[in-house]
Amino acid sequence: IELAKKRALAGRWQRIHRGVFAVFSGPVNRPAQVWAALLRCGTGATASHVTAAELYALCERVDERIHVTIPAHRRVRGRYDGIVVHHAHRLGRSRHPTRLPRRTRIEATVLDLVDVSDTAREVEAWIVAACQKRLTTPTRLGGALAERKKITWRGMAEAMLLDVAHGAQSMLELQFLRSVERAHRLPRGDRQRRVA
Image (cartoon, rainbow, N blue to C red; front, side, top):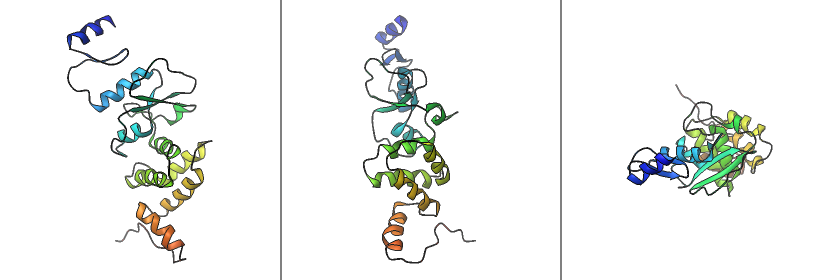
């Protein structure tokens, strides 16, 4: 640590968090910021929520802070500037086994975002985006949802996954399905149908 402090004072290294240094000078890019946050949070720390969504290219950066989930039995001490710490009981199952920086699986990421959504429209947007970008499928999301004991918007998410599985894969298609087709009892349309 003393060597790191000396090099940081000399301008060759940069202190990002307490005990975490970048061994280069110049701008610290986003992946390096995520790695630094994971190192600061310690064993088992995993990028999650909007940070994991950003790493999967599910969304653009929507929060400058870095969201990290750690095992529920661990507690963090001290200040964690720019880091939002979440806790999870089954983090080992929701962490992706190979992706780096460490992050939650795409299904867990989407469900974390659904859980913290403020509106039904946000719930729709996360689920539709993940399926539309082919990062996951309604079946896999449904399986991950069934494993969760507690989650906000469960009923809506379950109903929505059925609609997405039947081909409504955009916000506009979902709105048409609910507000036009079902509301006026029109015949069910063929969605996402392949034509040779």
